[in-house]
Image (cartoon, rainbow, N blue to C red):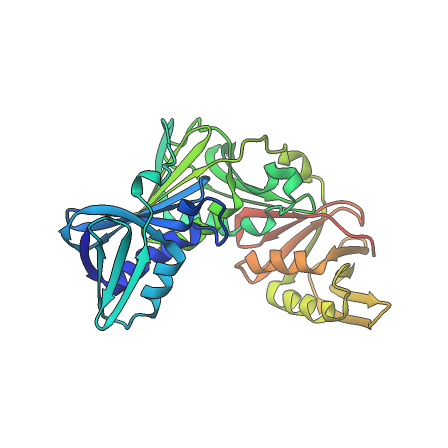
Length: 372
């Protein structure tokens, strides 16, 4: 194999694929990236056996061929080469090593045979549809912070993507929960998604996807089956296994009878929560909201370090209520809201609270209260 390409093209493709590779691997081939030169492009592929990313970079192929080299090492080398330089990748005659040559720099990397590189067989996809990258990004970003990190409840370690009838139209909906909070976002369902199975996209796949959908104008092709999902975003193809489990009936957790409405300036509220939670204990992080007509008083008490209170003006005309929340969770939700005001729908101190953006009815958050 002998191929020449722009450093910027190679670095961009490597940055997309090398992140999939785990730093520590018991199987040596999984530490490598597969390079395959053919025609006028170099295809790069990396996998961790659950997730596979491939991308083609424009290149001058003087001699076709394929090999595998350590992914993170190649990425670090190319990253440190000067801007605007050209890179030549050239394998030995026996294929045991690959030279990376750029200007006066010459690196020699150990290769493993391409035949050892595992392929993530995708099988048959039952549903194929296209959607805007901006819509997909919205579904992911509005919900991913609520994904559970608790390994025992593995079916919560991802985003539940499914279609649902709402307000007389079919919606594509994403939901994530860790048992303490729930996030739900939805968009108009794209053509072709009708009747798709409800699927759980793993946390790592969600993280990679988030970095790939950075251009809102790109159309994303989504293909899925009961066990796999594939996203094609420009020249990048991401294939992932799905979490094999049943997502809980989240509808039962979303309260419908909360009749106490609190409307508050989102930025002022977020800043106040951040300030008062400075004195909270790392473990508890509880902030108490005393809500009465026209105002909210935020209080934090920490026996070890002190206390803090702050008053905020708000729109509220129901019975006074005192309720506690985890400050970190409140800040996470506030960060997802894009409008100027946040709407809290409350019932009592022991019941879940619904939070929404006054300007975006497609997204909804549920927070369980804390005892304070």
